[in-house]
Length: 325
Image 1 (cartoon, rainbow, N blue to C red):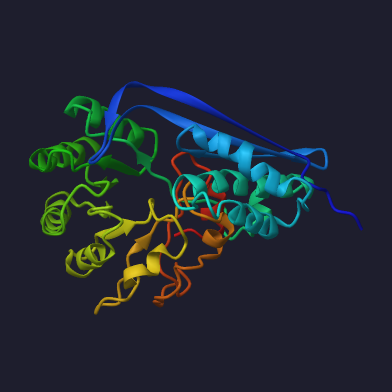
Image 2: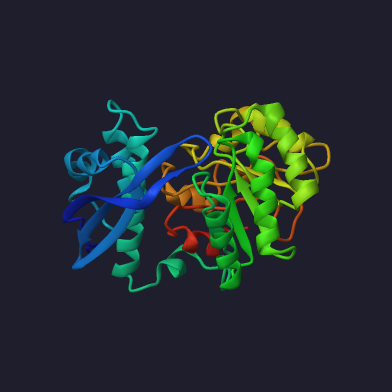
């Protein structure tokens, strides 16, 4: 029996300006670049994408395409291995893995189309739906724009909202207070510092955010590179406040480096956010590899470290439906 071969690879990049300059705790920008990969084979086309510099599109065309054309379109892991080997002398972490990520997602999309299956069915659906949250609340927003956005999402029926903190720590308590007042007491309020705080400052903010404003999720309170710091915050932060990180972990073993997933004395583990726009292999994120070292008994996570696969543009929905928190 012959199987479809990968016949053609296309890659393109598009710069999308923002309405106004935006910022979070550690970065400022006025546009976002999306890199799109298209994999053709067997009369079908698979689509994948990532957000990074436009040069990733050239990397796909000039380096990855030649490594995979002619390979079995159904053998995604083998194709992934070929792409990984092709980047040995160029470098995989960062830009290289984001290019592979776009291709990896396109390959799975192509396989689903060749089998005439929804992607979620190919991956192995376990849930009919997933909880969602509205994400924004940039530090560049004034209080009016911040509260209008978050309250607007709640009015639309989204019961969880996330805002950015960390650019001006002195003003963060007032901003979070305004956000809580705008959305009311029932909706869940999340904050994301994008690694802006130091360990002790992050710990102080964790207690303040939780006790004063009922924040339930603190994303990247300190740098994702500071794994010991994240573990410090998890162990000493208040109950009811999830410490989350992993968006900028460039491989699926990120969560085990520095033993961040090691249990604390009360059995709590951090929430790992593998980002399929960044990490090396979306299939391994879906299987949870690298995030299983620490286990706790829970009906929700099936004895595994809590994981919330993420993506800035929503392609993680199928993943979360399969394995999500």
